Image 1: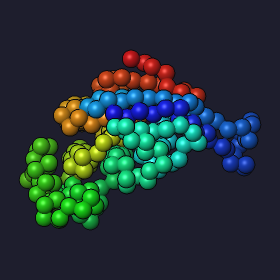
Image 2: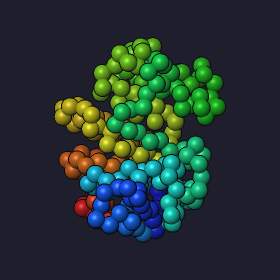
Image 3: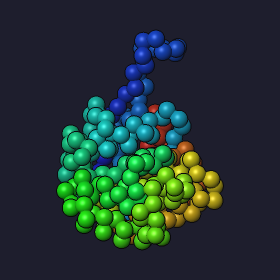
Image 4: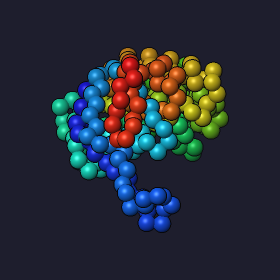
Amino acid sequence: MLEVTGLCKRYWPAPDEPASQPSAPRWLAHQLSLQVAAGETVAVLGASGSGKSTLLAMLAGLEAPEAGTVCVDGDDVTHWPPERRRFALMFQDFALFPHLTVQDNVAFARIEQGCRKAQARQEAVAMLARFGLADRALSPVTQLSGGEQQRVALARALLSAPRLLLLDEPFSALDADLRQQLRLDFSAHIRSAGMACVLVTHDEAEARAMGQRGYRLVGGQLQALW
């Protein structure tokens, strides 16, 4: 379970940034609290610049909060480096390695965890089979469609057995039909893997399709939507 308590983070405009009050900070997170159970997806909506991506960055350990705590399964990970947290962060651009095959993209995280390459590749092919991509294991990842690449990114995330999955606008670059199918695919795999998941998006239809609970981030605080 993810437990976030009292998270605080401000955005300070640059001195030369045009604004009516250039020195006034803006809250991206202000005493923000959130709980996400294993197997649950919580969606966070918000306008551009509201702090959605910053929230994910703080959860992932890529940015430090000014105050508050981030706990997972009872561990206070607030000051842990990203690699120690065992979280997976997925962006809309997939962040796949273009010089690697499909198989080696999926195996990468397990190899980084110290697994032997041969074993990691076997596990990767088995995971790809769950997504109907086992026959593309040795293909260059650049030969896959956008939807297939997104499934590869999810397969890589699941194979690393993350304690928390963070999704940052994961489908915004895809067409409408493919987005709808991948929402269903992702939701099913997240539940079956028993992962806690936080999805940030500007698309309310996507949020409602995937999130068992939904919030809007306004003024650094989460307002419950459902």
